[in-house]
Length: 436
Image (cartoon, rainbow, N blue to C red; front, side, top):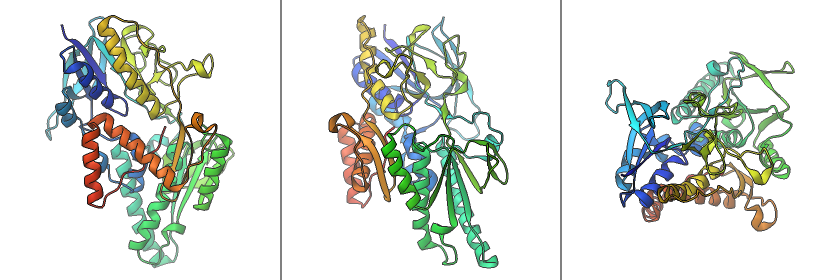
């Protein structure tokens, strides 16, 4: 009987996994692979800050799930998982129709192996006003909305400058991790580019004021102190006001209020202060979850209460023995990528009745992209004996390589090389990526 593999979530790990499993086990008929995702297209999440800043359009990085599935020989179901029956090895799915005006339908899908990789979402930590007044960059739609609203605000501010002599835009970004830092730098770069198309009375470089608020003592907590300090200096040089030790307690119509009583005026608030797994994972037919809704797994990526259910990526709390007794792997795209690669061997072991492999994370550091203005990061520390600062061209080249690797995992080397050559011929360029 053909082994039924159900993959929930087509993000940075899920789509490459479906493609690799179809190649390794699907073509020979050993396994039937199904990918379930509520969206019609895939956009690599590290691109969202560039979409929000107007650097790229959401459609530029879109990949059709259905097209990839047809080309690689797996099944795609557009829908959202709504329930799990572990006893019957079934999942409930709310199927989304592609036809305008059509209503969603319910379906039941059966599996032999279930793999959950639904990623993460921004955590509001219960702070009043965040859900109503702040923008979160979890989806392409949210990023496009921010880009559109920022452009409209620029036009309005320019009009005010023309009539009253005053005008400006206050953007406050809460959180100072890699996404927040990159978004601030991309907005600065974009406003400089827009200045060429705006009337002279509004200086977008000066009048779009950017503030980063971070509760911790320093920015970029996952990077080394030296690199964080370097990035902090670069942000200051870009005219971005960085405030550390500022814990936000409320987002109001007037702006952002912090624990010490300060009010930072804001026309736009972007909330990037931590992540959690989707809430529906908590209590999913008795599977164990942690305080941020992640499914608890062992080092084979199996959930602790069901050997037929696996989880990986941001939605999984996976042990990291090399970093300490209670350490967990960080929520990074490179973790999900490495776990997806191992799961291809894991499925092969299940099919053969062999012992499952154990996941060993190989950390390649972290990069923070500051657009074409600058870049800094720690990369391949084991190979160079320490942190390596990557500036301008080197950083951009590394981001392009990471993007290339992600595309290869979905489309194959030949197709990606042909597409890349076509873009070069037509004067295009690669998007700059970040490594998480």
